[in-house]
Figure 1 (cartoon, helix red, strand yellow):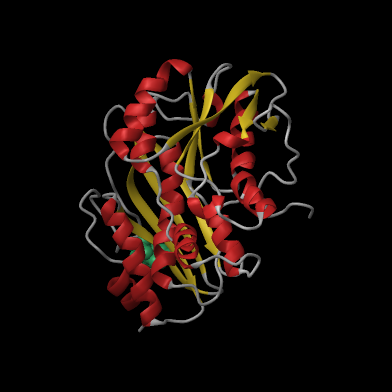
Figure 2 (cartoon, rainbow, N blue to C red):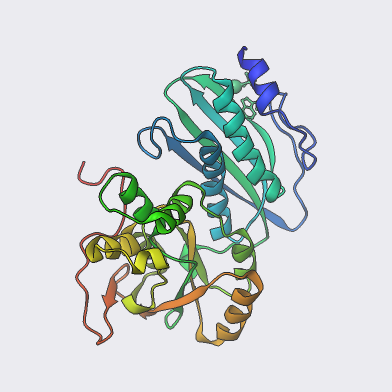
Length: 321
Ligand code: ADP
Ligand code: MG
């Protein structure tokens, strides 16, 4: 199978939302009046973001999911994706699995794959996504205001706990182990939440590098600091029953790969947020408060209001280099 047969077989699907999709030099599509494009790229590299031999279907899903998560954080409606793939060789079983995972999630969100690139090389999956948002309404990191409360969707730290289990740093019993591995391998981008937050939140970010690290990005962009209550952070049963408390705490505060949304909203939004949580069937937890000044500072407090010492904030590819 050559390059073009490979593309035709696994990646050339109809793109009803575009005028021209896969198959020409460029994809061509319309802009809707009164809307802006939100665009983002994320790359998954073998040996860095996934291990050699990782299940291709989950990898296809995750490659798109992490990108849709960025659109969700901006409150953008996903429309199109481009996929640049480097592969060491043509393995049909791998390609079939990968495209099934990728295109399955794309279909679930009405996203058209409109182009990409395919080349031989160390395995690397890079996606660009385009989403639409009404002009001026994108949710940004820099919109947070003093007095806003900090909210988090879903549960924190499960993906990192799954990674710790895979690496043999913690033993987990069967149901918990399966649940956290599912969270690591097949994250759910919070797209519907992001869209709804446009009328609720002042600022948002998706949690990909670790809760504290990503909250700090939002705080720096907004020029504010935050107090976070450890007890309020949403933790799954797997997390709460984890035998190694120090590891569990690090997963919740600084573990990456959760792809939950962290957002800030004024206290007047409590009712709307509760209704939204109900409608989406997704827990939304109020975990902290924003304060003026000391941009980027986060204090994690225990039940008595004492500061908890935090060893690390999150993941950084070039830390210490
Ligand atoms: P060019 O040489 O003009 O850059 P290519 O031969 O790389 O074009 O690609 C041919 C067509 O297939 C283009 O429309 C490109 O966007 C698309 N394409 C290539 N690889 C992929 C992929 N992995 N997924 C989706 N579309 C792809
Ligand atoms: Mg090309």
